[in-house]
Structure formats: C-alpha cells, structure tokens
Image (cartoon, rainbow, N blue to C red; front, side):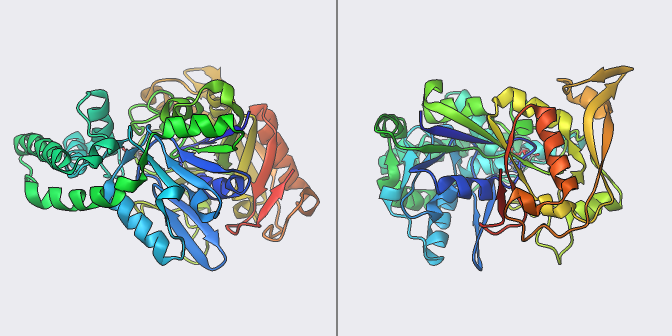
Length: 428
Ligand code: IMP
C-alpha cells in the first residue's frame, strides 16, 4: 500500500516543505490535495532558496511527477508565474512533470476582490486571510457555480465564464461601496494563462489510480495545517478546505486502503498567522526569541504574506488532538535547533476551563479563547544542534523533550530537523 499522507499538525508553517522534500526523495509522485497559493513552502537546496506556493516541492527531485489535485483552488496566473520562476532557477516544469486536475477549481480576480471585501466587512472580526481569494473560490465550488481547470481547454467559453463571474462580483462589490473590477483587464491575463496551462490538464484521479496499482509510491502533500481545517480547526478562524488526512482522499480521489502512512509535521514550538485563539501564545521576550530576528534563519514571518507569526510554547493538547484527528503513524518535529539556549522549556499538556481539566481542545473558538494551558516544565539545553545527524548527537534534555512529545501524542517521532538544509535531519 504505497501512499503516504503528510499533514501539518498545527496552524500551518510547520516546515512541511522541507519534510515533503525529504519524503519526496522516496516517492514517485507528489500530489497536493487542498488549498492554493495561500500556502508557502520554503525549501533550501545548497545556496538556492525555493519558495513554492502551489507546485509541490517534489518538483525539485528530477524523477518525481507532481500533481495538483481536484481539492485545490488554483490561481492560473500565479501558477504560470511559479512555473516560470522554477524554470529561471534551473527547474524546467514540463507538462509530463506536472499534472493539473481538470476538476480543480480556479481562483478568479473576482474571488480575490471578494476576499478583501469580506475581510473589510468583518472589521474587528476579520479572519486575517492571506487575501488570495481562497474562501470565495471554495464558496463558489460548494455553491456549484465555480469554474474548473478543465474549462480552460475551451478558450471562448472560459473567457465568457470569467466575464460572468466578474460582472456578478462587481454587483457585490458595488453594494459594499467598493471599486468594481474592469472586466476585460481582469479577463485577459487569465485567458493567456489558460492557454499556457492547457497541456498540463489531466484526469489526475485516474492517473493516481493507475500508478498506485502499478506500485508507484505517492506522497500526498498537505498544505496549511490541522488547526486551520474548516471542520476540525478553530472555526471560524480557519481556511476553507480540509488540510487533514481525510482531505487527501477527497482532494485526490484515492481510497483509504491505498494509504499506509500518515506523517504529522509539527514545529517544536507553536506559531500562528492570522486571527483566532492560540492558547500558548506569548507576548514576552520568549515569544520574541522564538520568532527570531533578521539575523537568524528561523525568522517566523509568513512565506506568503510576510506577516510576523504569533509564537508560543508547544501546545501538546493541540498536537494530541491533531494526532487523533489524522491518525498519525509518525511525527516529524522541525526546528529543534531553535530551542537551544533555554534553561527550561514549557510544554502545555492540558487545559483548564471553568474549573475543569481538558485533555482535548473545546470545539468553540470562544471557549478556546478562555482556556488556560497547564504546563509541564522540562530541562532545556545549551548546545548548538545544527551539526547533529543521529540521536547520539543530541543532548539528553533534547531527547527527553522529544520523548515527552511522543508519549503525549502516543505517536513515535521518526525524525527531527535541526536546520533548514536538506541534510540537517536526525532520523530515529
Ligand atoms: P485563507 O486560507 O487565505 O482564507 O486564510 C485563512 C486563515 O488561514 C488565516 O488565518 C491565514 O493566515 C491562515 N493560512 C492560510 N494558509 C496558510 C498557510 O499556508 N500557513 C499558515 N497559515 C495559513
């Protein structure tokens, strides 16, 4: 059973890009199953830094075929830009190496304008979206009026569908007192992008079915994270898709029997961009230190939006919840090196709410705002970990921290990263 699902176990930005890059080396196909260019995956290869938003990082491995699954929402103009950027960096993306599901939905200029309008209308209750049009595109999908990638194959009809979508969005924008879009100006670059992307469009579900039957190893690459899942996350402060393991099945059209490994990626501390509850958030010098400064490579600033990330101690309650929701078979922890230099580390192991102790987070965001984390304190370490390559290279306190996380989630930790480079990984 050759499919592996890689899922972010927190609020996104867990370092999935580098974990995916590692797992891709053992895969034939890497397939993205949800979200769009709200994601930002950074991969360091030598002195090159690749920042990918839609194309899976598997593209950096020459023999890997990449798939953009039906569960995604794709901005065709930005996808063409990404393909061109990769080509400039020496990674040509031929149609044989990137398949776009004909069933994936498209993000139009109307969606981007409506995302902004919706955030403005929410005022102080804004979600803090990436303003990439993600929510409105999924809204059109479930409203059964979305435009799908396969429609790019018929140029005239595609242009007409786009015009209609933009005209309809203009009515909503006008009602909110916002500037309408110039229809033809908005449509033109999309039609150009559609012409470029035609050769990439395929029935990816059938492709995956046939390749899995032939024994190909498929990595299903998640974007965002469990706590941003529209069902299981801190609703309404979530994205509009299902980044959890279940989303991989619907987002690619594969059955559960094809999957034998579910890898959870988690940072060794907590971060979040955008609004919404974050029980272990710190507003002190520890939070600043976890965020890093301009001199440190671990800068906690969003890859897509550049916003500073909110930082705090690792939330073991959320991690245990993510393990439960996704059925992780293993955990990969990233950025262990960032924790060097603390005398003690705190780890949230339960929440207190209205006099009760909770082992899992409450469903309502309002209740989650009020929980008080119950911390366990573990010894820290001073050693620089960047050269560690095996368990024996890690200080006892670091091993103890890892073991405690594994015990809390009842999931083994299979690897930890100790720096951004491909080889800065300790496998257990
Ligand atoms: P949207 O996906 O742009 O609608 O944004 C909804 C929420 O998800 C916001 O809080 C975003 O900051 C967050 N979000 C979306 N994509 C990512 C990601 O790739 N990493 C981290 N947060 C994300």
